[in-house]
Length: 423
Ligand SMILES: [Zn+2]
Image (tube, rainbow, N blue to C red; front, side, top):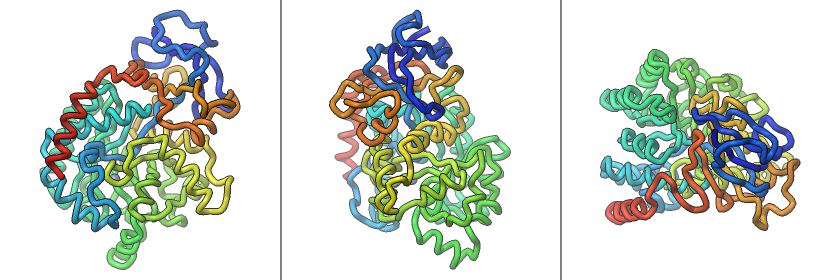
């Protein structure tokens, strides 16, 4: 038994937060929530009544190794940015670059209280090794483009080698986007996903141009496309962006195996538009939050994404009641875990994985926070600077600025060298 002691506990199944101890069993799961300073055992972290414990934050759509491409091709439209800047650099990346970029992303996310992420890129075996070493949790897929069989084989061998590893890695299949994968190839990939019982992670209707292509060139509506390609029948379907998913076609994605990932900062930066978040939620669609890659955000900071998502839709819709802080926190925790294909992660309750983000409330921004308003303080006043500790599967991987699994200086030096060589 180890104990996260005397913390204010909130998750999306609670109305009020509660002071208590979180007891973690030897299997890395929560075995009990008790009164504060009640549980007996080794103390993993003592909040002294001045820390807030939230379920671990999930970055539900990203490309972690793009930390090495941060700052490249600033202020270009998506297709110019991809074709003129990103794709040429990506063609040069080595497996070692991918590893070094992933390690750098682990530092950034762990220190921001992120415990899990959903990623699409290539040389994913190297990303998986980074995840295993860091102590984080991830759902990984190899980005698939064209009709390239070798990429599909690579994605399947990633699944053979890493799916379920240490209970912390889920492997999905990663058809890149409608503009890089044809309909027949997509049909085949979704059939493979169903056969192998794997999820799919897909970029979906990020820009208005993609919707126009559907209508003007493919002569098909998005909902029919999802049906006809078999994507809706896979174990879990993660649809990144979905900015232009028509609001009269949301019922097809309001399913337990589908998660839409809202990436508002990347969408704003690339001028892609505003996802209709309120319609998503009112239609019963599960929505998670992601940062997208560091080249289009430029942070891998889920706190930043939460605050921005909570604010931007209010302003754009002239409606301060639009999207509550509690909905936002649920998107960043439980819903992200569901997108990873996990049914036992994202809440602070008995039997769930002990993935915990611990926040310092003993700081000026939290004066006034109590059991009734802790989620609102976290979303509107909180920031990643307040994270004191990060716990994954009951293991403390970050505490008070110290990385307990990774060598910060070594990672920074390697990534800095790579970045200079790629520029
Ligand atoms: Zn993306």
